[in-house]
Image 1 (cartoon, rainbow, N blue to C red):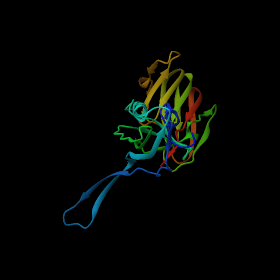
Image 2 (tube, one colour):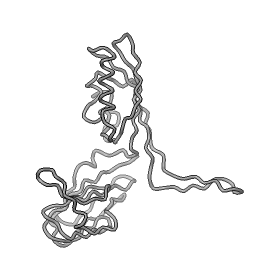
Image 3 (cartoon, rainbow, N blue to C red):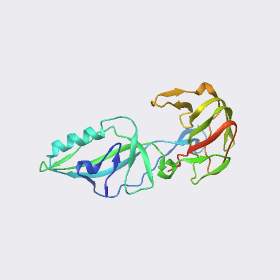
Image 4 (cartoon, one colour):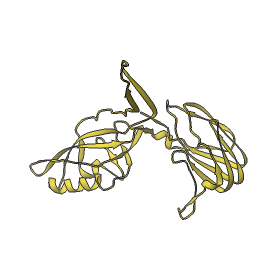
Length: 241
């Protein structure tokens, strides 16, 4: 893929589509509430530690062996086939990917019934996830995990062992009442579960005590545990804007 993008399981090259130019480097807006107080100069801003979605646009054209209307139907089926978040990546920012949805509309200019031109506007979650953050860090003894970004990441943690114990990540401790071979902590969804051999998911929230789930703050994060836990694997999910 030299120009264009991949969205979900397909890319623009599957439709003889190309990006006409490098896309703008967009970014989200911080969530905040603005209050105007009568008789007082200026406004008050209540800022949240969170960001809004933002739009990522690509100016595209396509040409192919098929007629423009036939190709347009195929492109719309691809982009509008699912309303869920899907992985969006392009060669212009090869170290990152985003989670995006496409709700349309998609107006395609028809030229000579063989060529098409359109603007594709994705609704993106605010995070630009580092592809390096998809690689797991494995620990068989206490260690350190360094967050290279300026933002706190919510990792996917797999615990190994049989019995009970505690896990401490970056100063946050989770008590494990019972573990059978392995347990997964999804710190973004705040969910504990076990993946069976047949890919069935077994809820294990009743087997832990976690007033809060671990997070990986910028900089050094110490990983340690007690009890019957024998190892830890962390997919950090690093992200930036």
